Amino acid sequence: MTSPGEDGNDDAPDGAPDKGSGNPFSWRYVTPLLMGSALNPVNSSVIATALVPIAVSLHVSVGRTSVLVAALYLACAVAQPTAGKLSEEFGPRRVFLAGISIVFLGGVLGGLGQNLTTLVVARVLIGIGTSAGYPSAMLMIRRRAMGAGLDAPPGGVLGGLAIAGNVTATVGPPLGGLLVGVFSWRAAFLINLPLAVITLVLALSWIPRDAAVTVPRRAREVAARIDVIGIVGFGGAMTALLVFLLGLPHPDWLALGIAVVAGAALVRWELRVATPFFDVRRLTSNPALTRTYLRTALTLLGVYTVLYGVTQWIQAARGVSAETAGLLIVPMGAVAAFVTWPISRRNLIRGPLIAAALSMLVASVGILFLTTHSPVVLILGVTAVFGITIGTTTPGNQTALYTQAPADQLGTASGLFRTFSYIGSIASSTLTGIVFRDRVTDHGLHLIALILIGVGAVVLVMTVADRRLTTPARTATASR
Image (cartoon, rainbow, N blue to C red; front, side):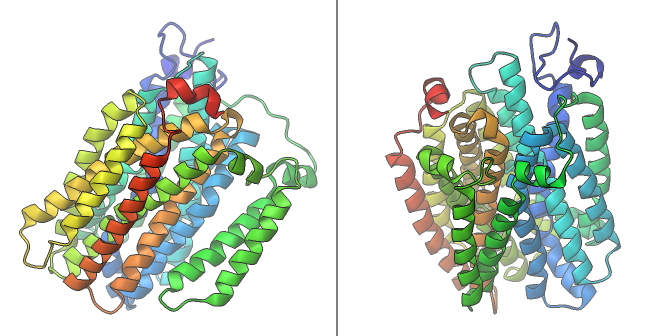
């Protein structure tokens, strides 16, 4: 059977290898997957340098524009595992294409928006749409690898996903700064239009159609198959929790209470249903995967604090433009991409994750020495070390996820992986919001550094003590 990676025919099932090439992952097959996966992290960070211009244009405070960050985080935290579940049930290509279409709609709405409420809705749509990219891509890759008889994870492809994922988040600030500087803040939304169209065309042309699935005709059967009640319960619990976090340092105890009650009800429900959305039993019986989720959230707390907190400090405390602030983050992404590739190709896990924790500690200590009078080279040096953190934690945790999650649940597991990533991102937004609530100062930046040093120490202890972080060749069977 001929794969679309060779002749553009999309009638082959998604697990079929490329005929005659010996490579099940041709560049045609992989390219749209990488582009779709990149849309989420780019949109997560591209808004960073547009918040101040949006506030000025819409005549609102800079603090109020932070809802644009929180809205996308919340949407993604719920939509990522939902997209993974839908991919498992109805086909990853179908979900992938639907997500890209929603991104296009969100870009149009945001580009034409005249008030903050409209922009929030646009960011929610973009969050929901971009959330389909990563979990559906991971599931397609896993199925294709199994169809080709590959025993080890396809390191090169996973490396590309890592670069297209958290690594490309560092492209957001400079890209946003350039777009805002040359055009206006609306370009941070409108950039999604050409990206979505290109990705959609390539996916339709080069990704094979999903295998036929039996879709229940009755709405009740569909709801039971995807566990709608579980999805709604998860969304409610996450929303209440994030409302509590984003309200700090003025805690909303009602929101926390709702989160606890909704979470307890969710666990009780998921233990009863036949096809749970949030498989509590599987999660508790697979502590290695649970630790991977927690390690990811804590590490990305540090990474996103740098992306947002240091970017805000550079603009507000040092008085530089959005374009300059974004460009100062470029070395961080370059270092991350350079480090990610060889680690992914060798399917390394334990060593890179220890390096991620150590580099996070070193970089956090470096932030203590930054002041408004620091030379630019020192700022570049500190952010570059955080680039090592990104370049090691992303492929290490992603390969751990690939080997630890059950093959038939990799879509939902990948979505939860991204959900925990966004929990780290939301925590970073909460942290910077609290510290910089009244004024962006050197003292606030140093307080952030002390907190990140503590988080880095926790990640290091977790990683060193985790004896399950061995190479995929030894754990691929056992972890499943």
